[in-house]
Image (cartoon, rainbow, N blue to C red; front, side, top):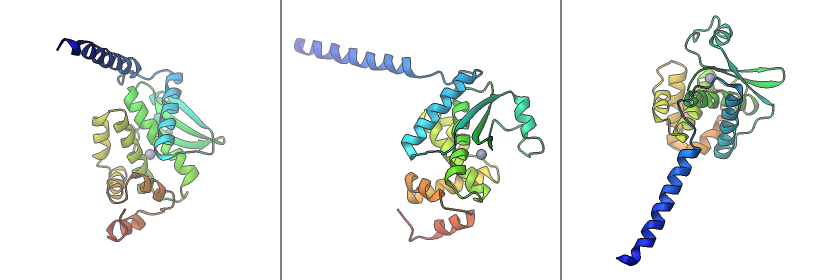
Amino acid sequence: MRNQRPLILLLCLILWGSAWARLGDKPDPYEKIEDPARARKILDDVMAYLKKSYNFRVHYPVQMNLVHESVMDAKFAGSPYKGAEVGLYTFEGGKHQIYVMKGWSRDVCSGVTAHEYTHAWQFDNCPRDQDLVLREGFACWVEMKYYDSVGAYQHAEDVRNHSDPVYGVGIKTMLALEDKVGPRKLVSMITTLRSASELDKILSDDRSGR
Ligand SMILES: [Zn+2]
């Protein structure tokens, strides 16, 4: 028994060391994002994760804009989503522009950034006339994956349970496609699909499995 002591002690030290390293590295998910430099770092983390996981690459530079609620409201004037929006993607001045509302938690800011950055990737890699259900469904799917990757499971669940006719139908269609072909093939298929009815045909065809 005595001989086992150094081994146990060493094991404890290793466990303690790795727990400490994890606590030290993990950013606070509840931190309110108010500083543009913090928001840019979140975008860089999101881009690195999506490049590593799904080989996402974009052609144009990406600008991160952390904006006040009033700026977002003005951009959504006349939209049915005004008041419910947290993020926005546009292409302006030869750049992908990502807008995220100031003051949200790190987790929400990260997930919304992943969603909007997916629209930048779609702009460079998917048919420009791809319909809205596919476009938003896929961006929601990536957002959900990002939440899962950082352990923000409740946010991931909220995305899966969207009830909106565009976002809700879109995410459910993507989850059905992921079930059928797996995540990597889903990403490659989305670069060529144009309409949700094309996808419905694939989903109802039993021969096009993995
Ligand atoms: Zn969107």
